Length: 337
Image (cartoon, rainbow, N blue to C red):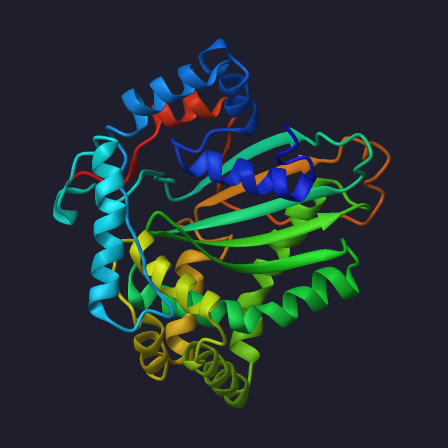
């Protein structure tokens, strides 16, 4: 009922809803939960047996103070016994779906999704500017990681400190069901979402020049910093579990992926970064694919007096009014041959 009540959280939920056809809104989930289907525990259990237990896939991770293989085997047998009692079918990993669906955004598209906030006391408006890259690969991921490392400080300095757009400004790589993307996030109580969008587009357009003008030392420092982060040991059991579970969740089972990424970073050059940036993230490029999620705070009608900018881009603007209909008409990753 209270999910996505803040504009920033709602913007994230809407981005995922636009990208994934199986990402349901909190209101859709609430309608189902409060319907007659689940008004008794018996009805809920009948639904779980018929619709969930017969279709779900269970993965397990045992990590921590377990010193003998026998202990792990005994715990596995115990869990399996209970799952079989619930009549779950067993499937080999090779038969599982390799990837959940993610919408395929056409080059040159600018998808626009607008919404109002849900909290009448929240005067903040939020922008999530998502740029889709494509299917995940080590080379693409490393280039985006390095671009994020180079951009973090300049984007905060420009949009937060100098332009004073809002109190929260960030950027970073996003991996959604094995599809790579890059997002710029801004939350503001003084600017409308469209103004935030325009400033973000201008910053991304100018950042190409920023990369070209960076010194070799700046590039090398960014690479070294990123390598150090990727080679850091887990500080506690929780971090180790999260790292291992991530490899299970994306079905890669790549337990030491961060080490492979760290050693591969040294091969990247300024030319590699610029070529990737121009192809994927430069808004004036005809190959750039943008999703702009704009949430206006429920109490934000008075904001928007801040300075605005306009950058011409070659994109075709498509408004997303109904996400269900949107997904019905669009192609999705993984793309069929």
